[in-house]
Image (cartoon, rainbow, N blue to C red; front, side):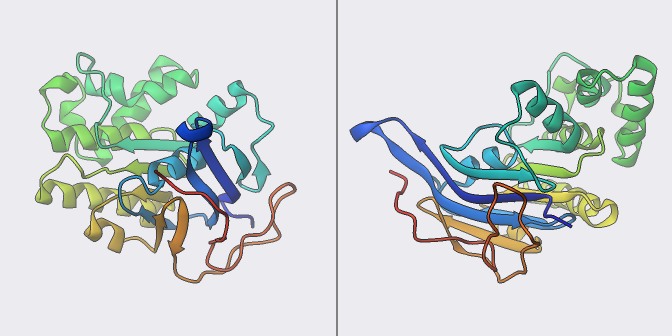
Length: 255
């Protein structure tokens, strides 16, 4: 089976000439289905850039990205939107809820985008809120929730479409330690009991330590990741990544 996500020789540059900089400098990585991976590093190391490329939210300057073995470079904008909505869930530090909509309305947004009917949206939205112990808040406005409740609503929205991958960018960054632990527990329960692949960008050492694997970036390069067998063969247009997922030695860095 191919990796759920695989990237090869990713380079992402911004600007030109003296104003230009390279955010990623030749990153290769394979993430297997059901794995939990923490992407760590100092600010400016390229963590969020890598997550955005893995999540098909941005395109690399060069290099290849494959989802379930299929190269994504030739996908149209409409196809990319469909794939993101069907395959990915997103949890961010800032929650990104619509404050004056109800919890249920926020949760079912991915289903609405996918064209799911109103009755089915409601059924599935209420079911996921029940699993996350938020059913009693279904008709409350998002603005009236605590920070921890807002993050749980964001997680509910992320999983309502039964995604293959959850991307979580600093998911505990705005929470106190006790609430952050609850949010971590929910994410890892989804990962280990439902087999959802979890990709986390974090500065939180405790959160990173709970993941199966830690990928550390420095100046746009992978500098540390435990050895791991990368699935193969690679799909057309994507060369096989070396064991451990890191391909180093490409010039460039982050200013």
